Image 1: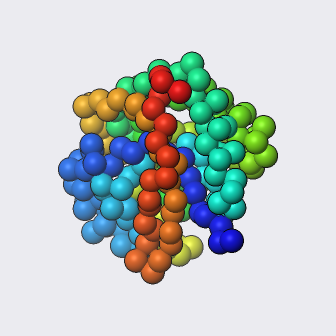
Image 2: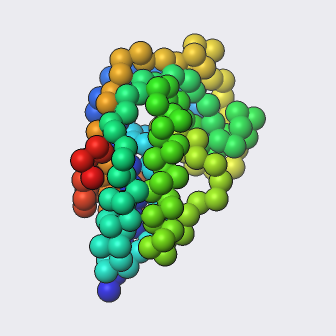
Length: 188
């Protein structure tokens, strides 16, 4: 049976689509060697499963449900801009979140603990809540980032009320994401 490429995320893109479009448009002109995200598809990844067997989806769903027990919806706004691993050697460009980051980190740890109990691999590096807006196409990224970008901020808050387990299918045109399960936070 064919494996499924999957990840668990909160969907923020449509809510902030206009602001992210403006930001990405200003960066696209200055840094063309980056594959910039479609603003409406930007999401907060909680767990990347990679390739998993379809029959393991029930285990993933059970682990996520247990991991969400006791958590309530969280409010966030967008604040900050940066790159991983650093601005000197950028591979991934991101926008930061402001709000319930400590609670979000606790939620991530709880979900990871339950997924680990189900036998899924857990990423060992520290979780840094962010929305990925671009990935470098090659090893070298050149260009000048406009100074105002570093103080990017959208004070309008979004309430994270659900997480979605997505199937991700890769193609030449990029990834397409299909929702498989929706998990309501505060009711699981």
